[in-house]
Image 1 (cartoon, helix red, strand yellow):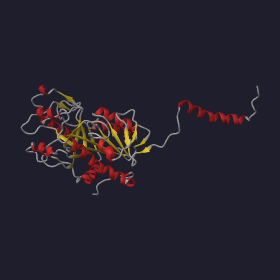
Image 2: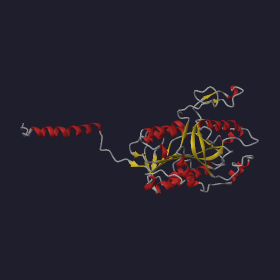
Image 3: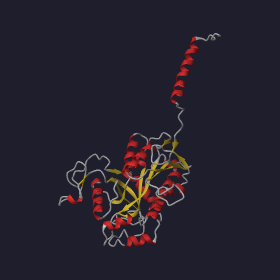
Length: 363
């Protein structure tokens, strides 16, 4: 057996120091960190009918096809893989209802592959509209997002005679009891009003799809001037909840619940199922420095009215929608992409400016 060559003692120390990080790297399997992909805009949708492309579209498909979201990246901790285009636009499909939305947004927000610190979020989906404010196919930019689930409830058959509803705010004794809690815990989210105003001004004249089925359906809503109008773009408030509710009484509750949590400033226009889950996740991610909550927009388009027309019962109109037979389904999907993408294109095409400064409407 040969003898080891004689090295200076200092060289052994140097080699030992170099070996420690190399051994640790080999043991843990870690590699030098890659530079995260900078995302300019995240488009958040909630459901798809079938495949991402090539069939009847849900909320996601038109974005995939028209924004050319051709690069597929797995998102193991989320509901569905994500897609990207060459411009830095990322599409996320969350799944239906608040729990899936919150989990999927959190999965994306914590993924180290993506730099979302300057990203804008365009949450775009369909919902049920209040005929007092909107028409079928209308697009609503949200000022506030209200939660319709957090609270107490008494069965409608047991509501006290002097109560207007069986819903009671959490930790209150009667409906709409004042004062409203000084610190809300997910009951309401106020979006960046300067950004919302900018998005509305940019898109208020976007032409929206209309058809004979929509005209026939909205003509039933006599006494509701906004409901019988052709579709338009507006600003208002949305309410999210895990229950698909319907009817005049529920619509009245949604309006009062929204006013309660916005100090009388809000106006409920569209129901939804996911937006408070998404907003809660984004709020936590903002606290962690992963996203900027001031760069979030919520757009809801009206696929159906949230209550029955005069002369019908809620049960009758709900029955016709139970299988997803909404009178403005495809036009509302179209409107969400058409209106939302005008904002996305502006953000991408003016990124040098938008990255550094959030747009607002000149005063």
